[in-house]
Length: 286
Image 1 (tube, rainbow, N blue to C red):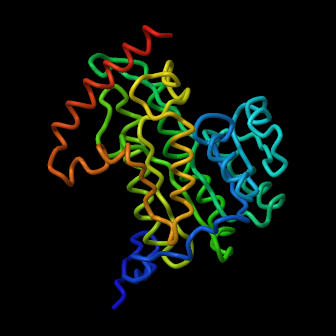
Image 2: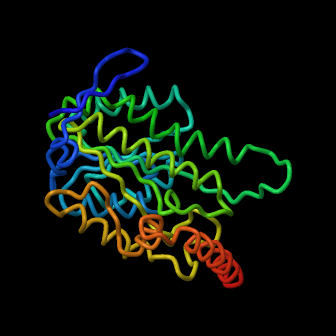
């Protein structure tokens, strides 16, 4: 029997079929996709764009810095660049219209763009970093998904990938708004998957700490997963059939399974102490 949910704003019924929710839409194609990767000029976005391109996909990388995008695309003829600031709502709408016009075969969206800031909550502070984190990490994926959803629903092999973090499951207390933003996108991805079941595959990619430039010194921080190793593992997981609805490398299971295994408080304490130690060691080396 299908379950029926109700859209409280419009009163429209949302039909949720258990089998559709469990198995989702057709799995992501192994090659021949046209992929939009936000935050594609560096870090995880760049590394994944290279791997998808090299297996036969066309990739549009988007970001704020044209020079970084061009460098990331160099030497790869099926990587295309587009400037986009996901913090700008009007720019997102205009970008979506243009990218669909330029790439009508677009069928995969990777919501990857994000920022991470360390914050001290123990006294009154300027909230500029917190507000920017919310605008980029939460509103950015919501706005871009909304702007492209009608196009994606019309594609027979559409996929939306929401990139969250292990910190969605156990927060890093030194980065509270970032951790909260990733928890929010995890929750949003669950709802999106249920509503789009059978029409668009929704996948959550959950990175551990990865050696990128997301925060100062992180690219060489001890204890973080090397970027190439992470990207290779993720690319391999995307080749599994059916495509896993959660892309989880082994290194993130410590955080992802903490609450389920009854060790949340212990893991939170361990993470907090370990992260502080890793940042200190990394700062000394840099």
